[in-house]
Amino acid sequence: MYKNDTICAVATGMGQSAIGIIRISGPEAIEVSDRLFRGRRRLSELPSFTAAFGHIYDGDKKMDEVIALVMKGPHTYTTEDTVELDCHGGPLVMRRIMELLVKEGIRPAEPGEFTKRAYLGGRIDMTGAEAVMDVINAENDMALQSSLDQLSGSLRKAITELRDKILYETAFIESAIDDPENYSLDGYSEKLDGVINDVAASIDKLIETGDEGRIIKEGIRTAIVGRPNVGKSSIMNMLTGTDRAIVTDIEGTTRDTLEEYISFGGITLKLIDTAGIRDTDDAVEKIGVDRAIESMEKADLVMLVLDSSESLNENDIRLIEMIRDRKYIVLVNKSDMESVLGDGDLSGLDKDRIIQISAKSGEGFDLLRDKIREMFFSAEIDFNNQIYITNVRHKASLIRAKESLDRVKASIEDGMGEDFYTIDLMAAYESLGEIIGETLEDDLADKIFSEFCMGK
Image 1 (cartoon, rainbow, N blue to C red):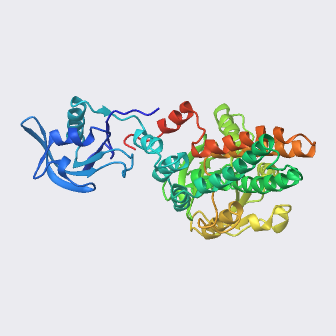
Image 2 (cartoon, rainbow, N blue to C red; image 1 turned 120 degrees about the vertical axis):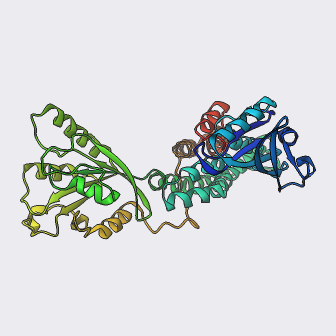
Image 3 (cartoon, helix red, strand yellow; image 1 turned 180 degrees about the horizontal axis):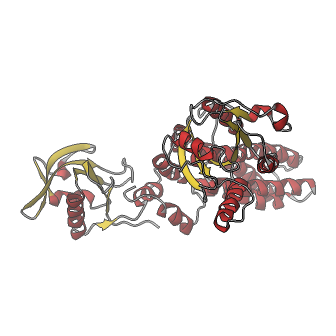
């Protein structure tokens, strides 16, 4: 996978800005930059991590004034010689400098190639590489903190410790088989069973954080449902702070699902405003109703909106029955008006999940925020003591490792010979290695880095 050529890319957005950064990394980064840069000193003469003011020239033609930052490997992000040119942030000037670098033999970087070189150079493992992109894409405080925690190496440390335990037991078995005079396997199966239980418990704990981790990273898929004209779109607009959804007194105005991301109390909600659910002969509206039901079935959270100023009808009752076995919150809207709903109308529903709310005044939204946090997070998030699995790939590898350990336990219970244990122990070891990139195949690594942004 590793390439020894020199690469370059714009590390900032291509829109207009005060400053634009062009990053150059590889064995010829300083040499080529030196040919284009003119300042009081040559870049090759500067100590590492030194900046110099000067100009970029194309022959005798001045292109832009820049600040050049020189960083010499291996103590750089990519572990290679690196130069960053801070130029003016206009798209034209950055494009001209990039064209000049390419003319000098430097190749445009592929998406994620700088981080790939950091990984291949041993500066970070695969969990750190993926955390870099998670930091960039973080949409709420908890997602950012989780990504920074992973970037600092917390997951790598936990996985490495588990692999070390598995490798030690595998090595002991192999040594005992090869040298039975010095290594005894008497009573070893019971000892190994205890070690496997401890490792498996740690893996289970990581797997269990997967749902919370996904929610931290991607947000809670939240379907806002109800019959027509109960205030679903008004609540959507209240939560987003915009007039995102059309609000009218005409039933059936919303005919398709409408999605919007919001940060709500430090967590992200993926709000899905749906068509009013009711029996209808209108072909287009029926499609919207079907999509609303589908969104409800796929959602992490269903917000059922009821109109407190009207009695329940058959559509309300139908929806109440549909949400009973799901994670739900019932929003009794129009709390600013006189309610005609009695306690008996909502019998069978969890009273703690029924919130009086007003899309008009905002009453009840603090209670809604607190209830969502309570429902989806087992305790206050503490990144100092808890590792959260936020990557589907990591969770899949953990599950495979746990399955391999289960097979070891089955072999112990069946009285199989110790040499059978090592096969599944090493399978677990390799599955865990996939998480940090120790046993990752090249094509999968390429796929992971291809999802990174350009210049990173």
